[in-house]
Image 1 (cartoon, rainbow, N blue to C red):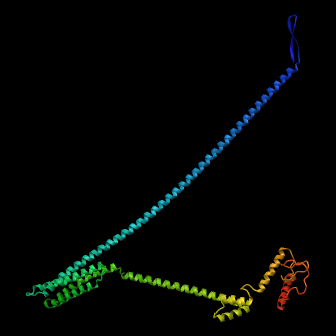
Image 2 (tube, rainbow, N blue to C red; image 1 turned 180 degrees about the vertical axis):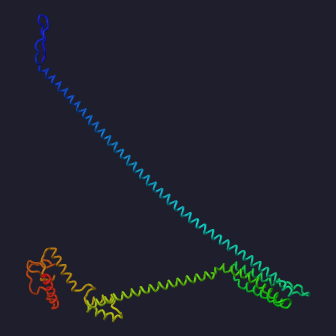
Image 3 (cartoon, rainbow, N blue to C red; image 1 turned 120 degrees about the vertical axis):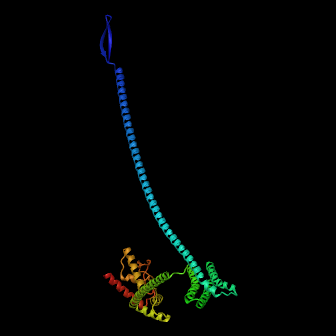
Length: 421
């Protein structure tokens, strides 16, 4: 719609507006296009907003997921750290306990070693004192015994005989030192000690004889005792050293060893007695079981048992052994123990019944008697065999023996009674 302007007397006068369809259509198109653009802008803004919300939500989810992952990692790390700290603490505790135990063991070992060293030092000191005392006593005894011996050998015409006492006493001392050397080098030493004692008794005899004639009995006896006591005490010292070297036990150690041996022998005898009692009880139980087995076999299999007794007697066996029983069972029943013709027939019949039950076929006594070698009747097979066409006639199979027919009759009767029950 448009408005036209007309001029009247040179003056423009507005006329009535006129409808312009083209311009109206263009205006309508413009308005529609503007509305569509606005709608598109709104949709785009809505999409942008939705996208921004989705991105914000995804960012929030990603942040939450990352936060949870961080927390999980932190918790895992804390747990791992706590576990490692616990392991370290446990290892430290074990190490400290081990160190304490090792330290205690070292202290105990050091105390034992110090005690042994102290004991060894005391023993060594005591042995040194004992050796010095024995040597000093030997010297004192020699000093006491020598004057009487020198007086005994005094002769103005033979002054040199006065060296004889020195030879006796010195000879005894030299021979005892030779015995000590033999002991140290692990050589025989008894002859050295024997010669030293012989020289000591000679010196004692001289002191006793000369002291009784030239002095008083006290002097004679005292000097004689000194001649024997000095070498005797020293030889006693050497005897102890020899026993220590050879590891000879003391009386207390021998008694303790003998007591331990008696206790061990007593325990061994008690153990042997217990084992003998257990073996006797086991043999008794085995014999009772053997007798029960023999009685059961004799009652259940009288023919086999009688034959087994004959075989055992023929072979020189005092009892029916398993080998004898197996041989007798095979001779009588034709099969190993637990097997026989009746057992085999019973097993076969049971298997046929089971097979018939699986195939839903009836099983009667008559069908159980049919042998595999018999041809079937016309159009019908027999149990366990193929179907044979034709009619069975007389003479098709060999006749059974009377015993077989009797056994088959008994089997059929038992099967019929079982089916009826």
